Image (cartoon, rainbow, N blue to C red; front, side, top):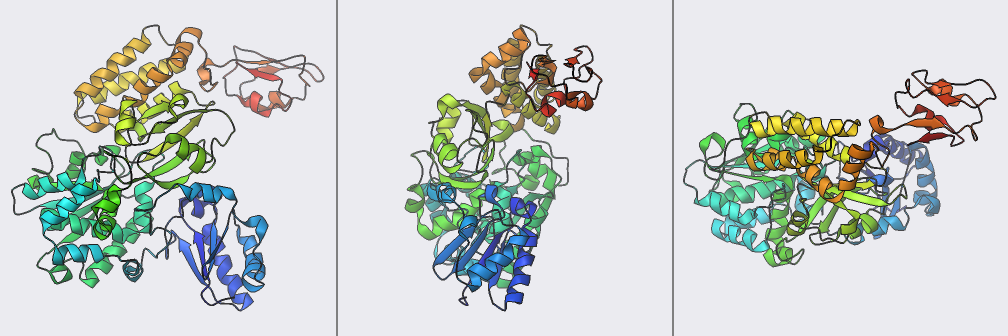
Amino acid sequence: MASETLIRVCMGPAGIAAGGKQVIEAFHAALVDAGVSAQVRERCSSHQVGCMGLCARDVLVEVHQGDVKTVYQYIKPDMVQRIVDEHLVAGKPITEWLVDEVYASFYRKQIKVVLADCGRIDPEDIDAYEAVKGYEAARECLTNRRPEEVIEEVKMSGLRGRGGAGFPTGLKWELGRKSRGDDKYIICNADEGDPGAFMDRAVIEGSPHAVIEGMIIGAFSMGARNGYVYIRAEYPLAVERLKKALDQARTRGYLGKGIFGSAFDFDIKIKLGAGAFVCGEETALIASIEGMRGMPRPKPPFPVNRGLWQKPTVINNVETFANIPAIIRNGCGWYAGFGTDKSKGTKVFALTGKIKNPGLIEVPMGITLREIIEEIGGGIESGRPFKAVQTGGPSGGCIPASMLDIAVDYESLAKVGSIVGSGGMIVLDADDCMVNVAKYFVQFTQSESCGKCVPCRVGTKRVLETLERITTGKGKEDDIERLEKLAGGIKAMSLCGLGQTAPNPVLSTLKYFRDEYEAHIRDKKCPAKVCKGLLTYSIDEATCKACGACLRACPSGAVSGEKKKPHRIDAAKCVRCGACFEVCKFGSVNRE
């Protein structure tokens, strides 16, 4: 085996859950026993590199030998010895464990800018980051450029804030620079709270120095001397790596006094969030840093004028800052070459739900939903028809199958009632009830409402009550009109973005799946057979084998019957749990 052999083991959240740590330990032991040398690196471990992206195939293992890369999938600890013996020692890769064509299709249309170094470098080693030109952009800006030149570069790149609203980043920095005040602040919003979203977490775990470098450049551009990273405490590995990266940057003189030998002073502190979704809103986040309850403030004034401690403050999210070093190194024209006229660059998405290949992806703006779902994601896992995709998390909307060819950019998604958001993308199939999906997201936003303004606090509660009534068979004829009226009021009168966008899942499902609402209300049926309150169970006596499985599984005693005689279900006793349906091996239990 060549001395330059490098082994990488996926240790992202999915990799850890699949046993990545044990796979790494098995490699260390097997290499010692075999008397060979190889450098074992861990993707997203407590020591080495970032997430590979294709979470569906974990534990993924890469074997690099010179220019040759071999990738194995679904690796378990007891498979490691054979890889060492046959591949590393005998030089014969184990073909039946190699990734298939899905691996190539997953990456084929991706363009890595933010995720370029995730999975390639050790996030806890500043030398590894500098080896891929890390901190060159910050040094160039602080020693050879004026702040106005940097701002213009960012403006010309077309980069828009990746936290959800899509506000032009360069313009926000320009407004921050023009704001009057000796003390200014720059904040990285890492309070990622959307269900199914893990983009910011992966970036900080895989390349924390890129975020720090982006913040340095932003601070220099607007004239901020102090910065904060507001990150939720539920991300312990990301927090740990960020702390180490900040310490390393200070040791090198990249944070603190006279950065890069210039006259510019700047440092960054970490503020841990307690998991409140509303603190993803910039004014609520500011209140939390100030030691107060995280509740939004009216705008204007905007944070660029009066933000943290009433000082000019620029806030961008993790992905926005991580784009900056690459833009400065490669030029605004390079970055603007990706995407569309109004939505430049790439976007990181967490692709989840009923998809064959869930994972972390980065694609050019303007790619279609079809390309993401069918080519990168591999299509629907169950083989059932694709039904919809929820983009933008609780603030977004559900886009139906008829719009699968829509471009994924700020303008196109907004036109159909959804948003790009921070990057959540949940795929739904024919087994999903869209009324229930809307109820799920309203439950989330209602419970996360800070309660400061009546439209959000009371309005989301009334919407949730209406949806709960519909999904339990108690819907009324005027409930659809009621939902539309409530949603309009909440959007128009809520104080912050949480309330203003909370009705989006309801409005989009009403627009594209109105027939499902009508079936729930008028027919007292759930077409997807999800809402338990609308389901009825019966046994087909002609096919019942009288095996007794359903009788034993029923928790309410609703099933009765003697041996060798067809069983029956007492509708009055049935609690609609579905246990009988799940255990019947002969398809004799009907669910309607």
